[in-house]
Picture: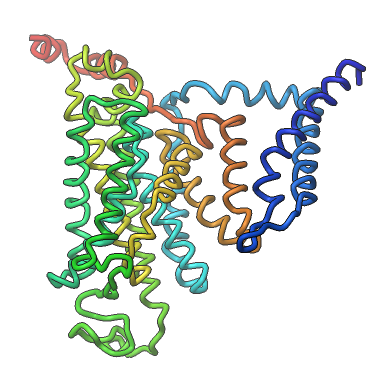
Length: 436
């Protein structure tokens, strides 16, 4: 290696080590113990040394021939979108295999893994809902957790005061959350960027504070219980508690507490598949095209005659409806809800799922939701470094894949070719009548 390159690496290592010491020193080098603190600066120095060595390894790899080829290979994937040629084969067989594998998961997984899978699917729903607002329409929403709370508390309070069940709340929650989305959208129709983010953040905090302080109605910090789900008046408990019949007695099978989790997972999995299908269909419809046009340039979009009020309202309402649907599944899975489950960190996590997966990419959002929910459960031994690892992952993704894990794919349209082909097959008299 050339001398000037060694000097540059030494300067880079010194700068990296200094910055890491400044960052890690107060965080991990000083441990609070009551009103005093314990000095553990060696841990901060060790972390800084690890980061410095990693940075040096990356720099050396980038300067090598293999590293240069690697960078050139992935440099073009960070800009633009992938436009399909129309000759791609439809992955029907792969989708069928994944669908059947998803349906069969409850029968091969244990209770713990099934609970993690349910949580991952809930975040898939949340990511898909926020992807409509942020990824497709380009409206930065930092209060999406409010619609999540609306769906969860609808089931909890509805069962307490009105007698709602799981299926009733599952039908009403999307409409109620969509109504809340419309109420939020009207004041922010003329806002963009940071201003829109601040207003939506305030809306999310207002909902949380109402749930926390209106103790007589919501239960306040104590929360509210959620009734277990039923299907055709069949209950999943050992003895009937809601006036129905236990499922195991009706079918003549031994009782198992896993039946409830199987039911929640299967219904949630079908709901996620339905939302994916609806979102993918909306993307290729005029409404989805208007969302993407609004995201790219609102002024040009309005100059072309697109109704920006209708476009923004539909984005907020459909995204909020998906969040309310996810809230119902979260409530019935937990069996209990309280305001601490709907903090700003949840909104930040959902936004991170959308950004890491790729703005506007359905497949990317699903992959990011699975990674950010399953991986922390597998690394519970490193729970105290979970936020640090999360931040490092965000930084790495923004450097190497700023458009997310999966880039947007736009379908190919050939209207002129199809019209010419169809007109060539028509008789001359029919062509003349069609032109008239």
